[in-house]
Every structure is written in structure tokens, then in C-alpha cells.
Amino acid sequence: MNRKDDIVSRRSFLKASSLAATSGLLLSTDTFGSNFKGEYLQVWSCGGLAEAFIPANKAYEEETGCRIDYTGAFAGALGKSLLGDAKTEVFAPRVLKLAQKLKAQGKMLHFAPLCFTKYVLVTPKGNPAKIKSIQDLSKPGIRTVLSPNASPPGGEASTIILKKAGVLEQAQKNAVVVGDCVQRVVPDIIEGTGDAAVVELRLTKKAGFKDKMDVFDIPEEFFPPAPVTFVIGLMKWAHRNDLAEDFIKFIRSERGQAFFEMAGFIPALSVEGERLIHKYGVKDA
Image (cartoon, rainbow, N blue to C red; front, top):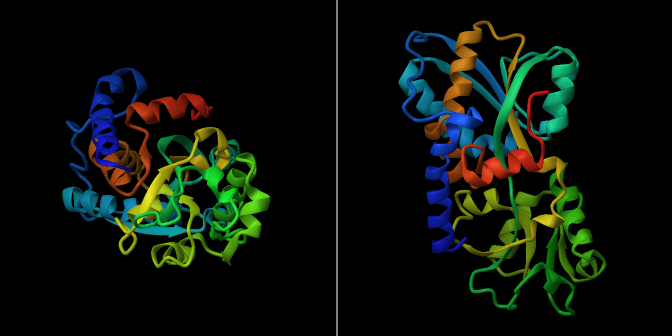
């Protein structure tokens, strides 16, 4: 993302405040946790959200005196366990259908939009292969880095994007790295082993990766809808609903959402987030 895009993003984020009154999103003027000192709250999320949740949880703890017992792990495994016998108090899943299924079972009482992910094309710093778009991955001699066997949705999502873009077959022929973890193949781009890879924007913000790659947009029409959306919901096992609701309120406030923006997500509380909420039908129904 270049400096101009960053400025636009921040302006959009601030502009979202004017939308909050009609969208139900929350503002930074709210106060949190006036009577939760010494309490605890169990929070689970898709592991990809950990980069945002960890500092957000710390900020909530510092303000309220409440301890957050946080687990960030593979979304499919957490979801499967909750559809079974596992219990938690707040859950932030990836894939809207999982939240809807938990709600249908009476295990999630309600949920709300949290954030969205975005897929980008990354190249080594300086872009030595002169990549301009995802279509360039089909050119002979372009060394691609793929991770088709990564746990869902990582490998599957990037494969779908390449297929929709019409470059999958040639990109597979051009592959110099075929890995089983999207995060682990990023160093192959940074070090110049490969010329290009499809990753989530959030990975370009991680410590050790930030500012070490060139990043290019991929048309949204190529994105698979399912893994784009993240929500956050109140589970029926919350020992104090008022505490769980307060935490969710904080995470969805302007202050909480800033942690997700910094981690490379599109906050629900933004003009772009508002558009995606409507596009993907992210509503508690």
C-alpha cells in the first residue's frame, strides 16, 4: 500500500464516524468496563486475528482491570469444537456461515461485523521481475511461490484467486516453491527465491515481514467470498453477559478497530467496511 492509499484509508476510517449513528457501529467516546475489575473473560478467535486481538485485549485489560483469557487458533478446529462440546464466552470466527450455524444451534446468541481481509500480490522489494498485475503470473519465466496445501482457507483461497484470474495452470508450472503454509513461504518472496505470491494483506504487516515486500492490489472480483468476512459474537456460556457485551463493544469501537486496521484488516467501522458489510450480507439473521 502506498502513502496515498494509506492517507485515503485513514480518512475513510475517520469518515466512518459519521456513519456510525445509522449503522450501529460504535464511537471512541464510549467508556468501558466500569465495574469489571478482577473479572475474567474467555475469548476465542481465528488465529489470523491474533495480531490484532493481542494488543486490543491488552488495551481492554489496562482500562478495565479485567483479564482476557485469549485463544487464537485454526478457525476450522475451533469452529468444529464449538459445534461439538467446547465452550467459550466470546468467539470471533472466520466465515459468516460458521457464526450463522452456531447461532442456529443456540450456542451464539448474536454476532456483529468485525473486519474483512484482503488479498494482495507480493513481490521482493524493488519488484525485480517487473510484475504489474496478477495476470503476469502466467508469463514464462516468472517464478511463483504457492502454498496450495496450506490449512483452509489459506491455500484454497489463493488457488481460487489464481483460477478466477485465469492464470492458475501457468502459475503452477512456474512454481519454484510449493508449500503447505502461507506464512512460511513469505520469506521466499522477501529473500528473492520467487518473484510473486498471493497472500493476505495482514501478512505484509507482521513483524519480520513489514516493509520488506512490494504490495499490489488484486481485483476484488477474484476473491472467494467465504474467507473474507470476520464477525464477533456473544456465546451462551458467558458468565457475565454485560462483561462480554462490553468487550465486544470495545473491539467494535473506533479504538478497538484501530488495532485491526494496523494489523492489515479492513475494519467494519470504515467506509470500506460499510460497503463490504452490505456486499457480503454480514448481518445477524
